[in-house]
Amino acid sequence: MRAEIIAVGSEMLTPDRVDTNSLFITDRLNTIGIDVIAKSVAADDRGLLGGQLRLALTRADVIVFTGGLGPTSDDVTREAVADALGVPLDEDPLTIERLERRFARRGVPMPAINRRQALVPRGAEVIVNEYGTAPGLLFERGGTVIALLPGPPREMKPMFEGLVRGRLAGLTGGWGIFRRVLKTTGRPESQIEEVVQPIYARWASAPAPIQTTILATPGQIELHLAVCAANDAEARVVLDAATGEIAGALGPTLFATDTRRLEEVVGDMLRERTLWIATAESCTGGLLASRLTDVPGSSAYVERGVVCYSNRAKTELLGVPDAMLREHGAVSEPVARAMACGIRERAGTDLGVAITGIAGPSGGTPAKPVGTVVVALAWAGAERVRTLWFPGDREPVKFHASQAALDMVRRHLLKADG
Image 1 (cartoon, one colour):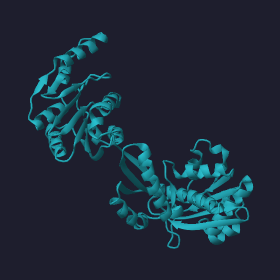
Image 2 (cartoon, helix red, strand yellow; image 1 turned 120 degrees about the vertical axis):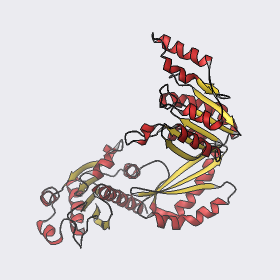
Image 3 (spheres, helix red, strand yellow; image 1 turned 90 degrees about the vertical axis):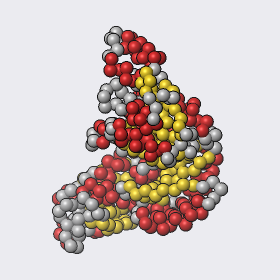
Image 4 (cartoon, one colour; image 1 turned 180 degrees about the horizontal axis):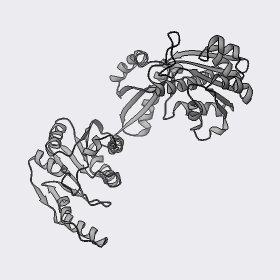
């Protein structure tokens, strides 16, 4: 079955507000096997909302509105739905009673404006709101279930939970949609797609088809897998097999098959091997150390981090020779290697990782343009160094540089394991 969510509120079309209700609703619908095919945010406009409903009726089995059920003149969801369905609004006496009792408990008379919240499109079922004044509304038209829910999450969530457990659960025979996210780094989206697309094609015609989506996010490419199954155990069998097939095709490019971020994966690897790491950062200004120490329990493997932004700091704190800086420049493989070795020796750790680069917007040259980054890793008796280039302004360059450093550590540990 397919669902559409329409979040109502002109304020959510401004930079200051974000629709979060649809995320909760999508998650709960997926657990009972209903796939969300469209989400939209609409202004408090009666004609616009009516049009949204008419369109949704052509493609969805379940339509969920959130917001626009308050008492003020800009709350027009009830009226818009009634217009689109061609039914009148009737005042519900029981809702009036509940509203009056609610205000009486607070020791104040009910404002006349709240009577608008008792208007019900003819044929709709009223859903009692235990946490606010706006009741929900539920009805069916042509086999489609339409739910009107209040906007405040504190009111919407328990109301929708009741619908999921009750009316909606029976629509799909107890099935659910189960998802898994596979995360890769170090290769562009096109290369990942080229490798996995033939696998996707086979899955589409399998007895239990797997829906797939590829998504580019900062520093990584994600593969989203979804399967419809009767229960979690059945879904896990299908998704485990699919994950194994993808892992075999992508190799070490794949770094997680769960919700962990790259810094968590690296942290777990360091902890399991009882290894200590220290960082030396120039252009990233401590971002790598920050990401590592964002992980709870990182004190078990992070010894220290040094921000050595200037050439003087590189020499005084890490022992990078002045002559090397003059000859090669701060953004160079010899300097990055010396930084990694210097922090490792001074910290007495198993690993030392270093980053130097040009984050921009100035400082670039034809030989070393803005976005040039050098990452190095040192361990007992050896080092590894890479020169990379990342597009964008300072923030993405710094993030990609820290991602590359984390991935260098991860790949080294995998290789060290044999």
